[in-house]
Image (cartoon, rainbow, N blue to C red; front, side):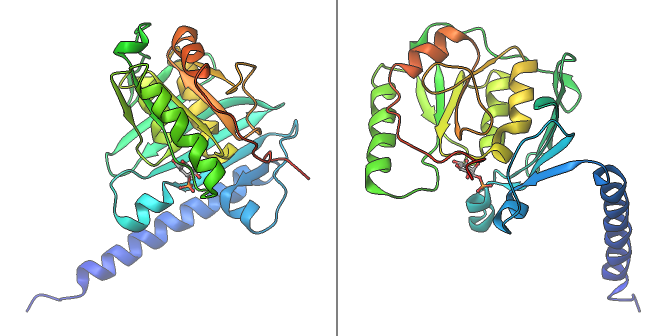
Length: 245
Ligand code: IPD
């Protein structure tokens, strides 16, 4: 008779091996480096970007999707040195798409080079925005008012996958022209930031100023024409910085 538990047993052995490899690599690589992650910050660890080599990690970007079985969930891993992002990796697990980019070396999806779209006409664009996690009526009103204004420019469509990391990769592949949000965290966007830039796109603050990873506000776009047109419509509301004391 076939052993009913052999598969489960083999699975446990392979998972233990993989977990061991991850622990080994983690100890090896994290020994002299700094770490910022959604879970560590939730535990009360500091969220300060210093000049030290720093991992910026979200193991599950799209937590609400994950809980509900909505099929977009990503792992987001970025690495910064001297406050500059060196590389980013986003794995969109259910689609089995591995996005990656190193500064100055291009961006890839499953090892194929990716490039932002060349659309400059806002009317031909698809824009992604998210509702975020804050449900205070004043903020929700501003978020929806911004979305309404952008939709009525008019643009071709508004979308949202429920994971910021995946949204940025969609900008990087040219599937959409831009993604913006106020209220995101550095671990949601750090890896995507490298991928968008290496795919030829740009990052700006929602007021048109320079992108600041710790500010919790960002516009990522295929080019500055699209970015600036969207920025005109964004109703900015206050959000506490990730590195606020
Ligand atoms: C969230 C997702 C979502 C974005 C939220 C994030 P989480 O990350 O990236 O798309 O709108 O602002 O907090 O909580 O699922 O890791």
